[in-house]
Image (cartoon, rainbow, N blue to C red; front, side, top):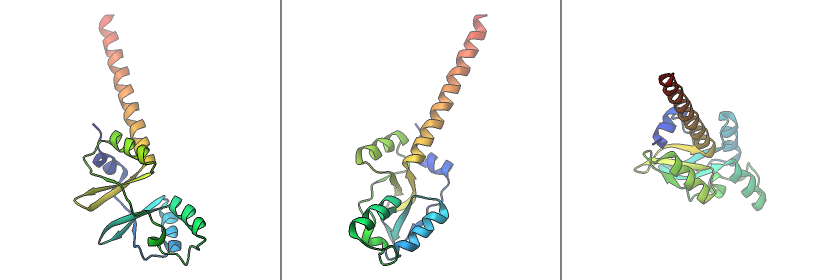
Length: 147
C-alpha cells in the first residue's frame, strides 16, 4: 500500500505557506514564483488553503482587487486533511468525493505538507507502470522455464 508519507518523501517536503493577513497579490506572486497552485494558510496552525481557483472565482464574484483583498477573505477555511499513513488511493477517493484538488497532510494538527490531485495521479501512474513491468518480467521468466 502506497502511503501519503511516501508520496511526500518522493515529491519533496517543501510546503509553501502564507498568512491570513497577506494581500492576495503577494500570495499570488509567491505561487507564481514557486510554480504552485496553492498555499497553505497558517497562523500558529493550519487555518485554510488558498488556491489559484479561489483567487479567480472568489475575487471575480466579490468584485474585489488583488491588492485590496486579504488572503483570509477568499481562502478556503474548511480544509480537508489526511494523515501521512493514509493510502494514496483513499486520498484520491476523498478528493473525488469532495471535488477538491488539494489535501493537507497533518500529524496531530502539525502540517506535514500538501498534496494535489496531480501528485496523486502521477504517483498512481508510476506505481501502475512499475507493477506492469514486474508482471511482464515475471511472465518472461516463466516462459524461459517452459523452453
